[in-house]
Amino acid sequence: MYSRGYKSLVSLPPLLWVGLFLLLPYALMFAHSFWTIRDGLIVHHWNLDNYVTLFSKPIYLDVLFRTMRIAASVTLCSLLLGYPLAYYLSFHSGARKELLYQLVIVPLWVSYLVRGYAWKTILGSDGVLNGFLQYLHLTHEPVASLLYSPFAVVLMLTHIYTPFVFLPIYAALEHIPRPLVEASHDLGAGSAQTFLRVILPLSLPGLLAGATFAFVLSLGDFLAPLLVGGPSGTMIANVVQSLFGAAFDWPLGAAISVCILLITLTLLFLTEHLEKRWSFR
Amino acid sequence: MRSASPILRAPLLSIYSALVFAFIYLPIVILILYSFNRDGVGGFPPRHFTLDWYRQLFADGPIWDAVWNSILVAAGAVALSLTLGLLAALALDRANFPGKALFRRLVLLPLILPGIITGLSLLMFAVFAGVQLSLLTVFLGHGTALISVATTELFAGLQKMDRAQEEASLDLGATPLRTFWRITLPNLKLSLIAAGLLIFTLSMDEIAVTFFLIGRDNTLPLEIWARLRRGITPEINAVSSLIFAVSVGLIVIWYRVRTRSPGAEARELF
Image (cartoon, rainbow over all chains, first blue to last red; front, side):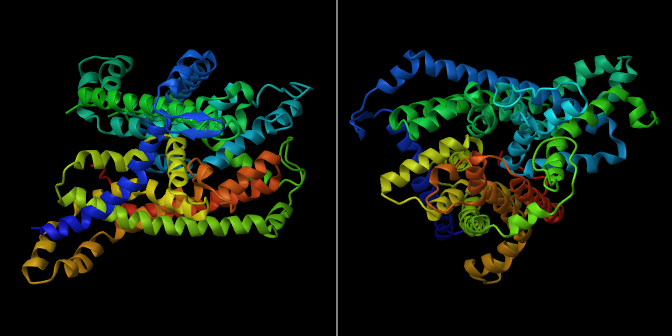
């Protein structure tokens, strides 16, 4: 029913815009990763040196592995907090369900920076937590190791991504037909068995989506380490950021970015397929 | 079936969930509480109530310049991403063209990729194009990255729309343009408002992409960021609390609009 003119009128502007302002920039990132820096200038000389450097110098791989450990911890912690919460809301919250649901969503919209900053004021050596501990006379000296550590990064990111993880799990739990759960009870399965054999398998796609989200977003985060991480909490995106800043080695920074991008896309691709396979139809 | 109160039915789970809620909200509560504390950030308990930090904040020129910059950027980003997102949603809904699947994924990429990747790519593009970094580059960056959000929301709205009205309008002799103005747009009104609010909030708060595209004039998050590096003051608590209040206000409006919108639950694009 729509004319060819209409169709090209609506498709051409976004196609051109996205091609120019998204595809071209991402392609430039890709191209930079194969270029070199010589005498402080970027030379368009195609080679694989950046990738060789990246995989031969232990410092980059070390940071990459630490980043993955941190991202994995964040994912695990957010699941441990988000899953039971989603389960409680979906199966046990009764009439307060809608209100509680909104309460989980609200922080999702509250500034990332605001929430990160809040943790800084809590964990600092003269922060709220230390003040609280001294008030209770549990300690007389401030506990110094709270802020500026990988622990602080995991804590802050877990705080930020728990609602993200909650959402798809809750959606998956809500879609489980209740007669299935009742049937399991009627056939003599206890609560634990019903959970393990019926509810958990059916919620796996949601769990997977949430976990991927938390992992991918933590993997590329550079603000949390700057805010609460300190030197021992440095992550791979901080290395990229410094290569694009003071260290001025855009090609190497681009190569690391391409690696982050590839890890992200691979994970998304894998989970998309697993989700489809595990989906309950 | 079983009628006991939920807390009695699953006591441990209830307590655990309450603790998770506490974990989610505690930092925000503490933040707000200490914005009224005369003795500054930290220490326990907060002792002397004061509004001094808010007074200081309202007299703080650079902060309000940054707020104004953020509003300009966000308003521009809303206009740009809604326009292109609407066209993209119409194209995905109604047209077939080579590379459609690729286009759909490409549009959504900024939503899925870490901000640093999109930010750096756009930085390289700006340098490549010889453009000086300024609020203009930030606006272009936000507007482009947030087409993802606009497209998702508006595509969902289009999927729920009844095509018959448009067909009738065209059959009765209205031009396609007139049909678009009189039928398509009014039907999408709620989706447009919801998407606009969402994009505005996201742009006001954006930091990872902005970080690499900012020139001399700061947006609000970047101004706060710069101050954080110099040390923390209750004034930042005060501005953060205000941001929190404004975000909550916008969310409430957003929910009102969204629950009335026919595309409320639709997420077909994902």
